[in-house]
Image 1 (cartoon, rainbow, N blue to C red):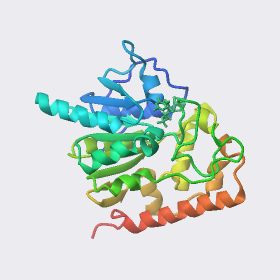
Image 2: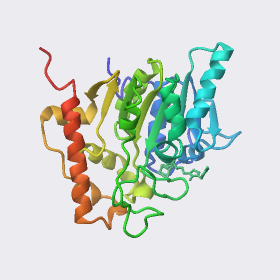
Image 3: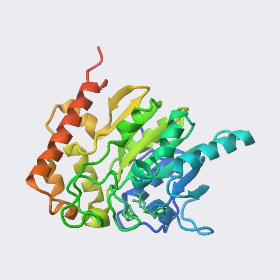
Image 4: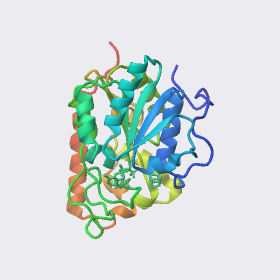
Length: 305
Ligand SMILES: Cc1ncc(C[n+]2csc(CCOP(=O)(O)OP(=O)(O)O)c2C)c(N)n1
Ligand code: SF4
């Protein structure tokens, strides 16, 4: 049976009173991730908003064991935890590395790539708020073309973002999925599925951030859903090389409807206030090309014969 708001476990691992900004998509996702793992997890987190949200020892707002690790080392730390559990003969615990896009696309990619190549047995989740938000929104490898950030303050970023899910898929790992904080049950299902698979599993979460992206705090879910409807965030999973659309993206693909134009998304966020017509077109072309690739790969759009 599919999980829904009624049968979702009531057990909480996120305690009341954490230090996230109002409307933070990351804290919403993390709550559902811990529910999916039923608290049977050791988490390792590099320097990021998540470190701040969790609090500092001995005070924490999540009741799971957690290692705070240096910025570049999420996957290296997870590798050590996996080895430690093996040496102790402990089974039944999932090792979860959870990092932002700075800690994944940029500084952490070397450790992550090495661990994935060795098929190390852990789940790696990147929550992507498209910038180094904890330190005041510097641009990262995931900041989009045209977005204003602390280090691209006037003209906005001049390059588009890396497709980290595609990079991880190229490592031939057994499970790669994308998720979106605005669809927490889709994320929950994907973490449940990842938990049951051995080897390196990677989930990328689109994670709207009100202070960094400059939209009202109560619009987090609206922005997340809009991102799915324009195809900025495509929801899918690739299990042993087999690609399936999920959730909102599956519905759009099945309807055969057009994606909404990217302009509708850009105008909702202050970070795109200086974007040019050429950049808007470049983003639209990028979205359209990726959507087309996904449509060509999807194995779950035909009715069963
Ligand atoms: C080697 C190193 N460089 C810089 C920092 C400072 N620092 C701490 S958190 C952070 C930003 C993290 O960005 P990201 O991984 O995207 O996570 P977010 O803050 O967006 O949650 C930076 C630059 C650090 N802790 N260590
Ligand atoms: S800066 Fe963004 S990601 Fe970080 S805690 Fe605030 S809303 Fe969440």
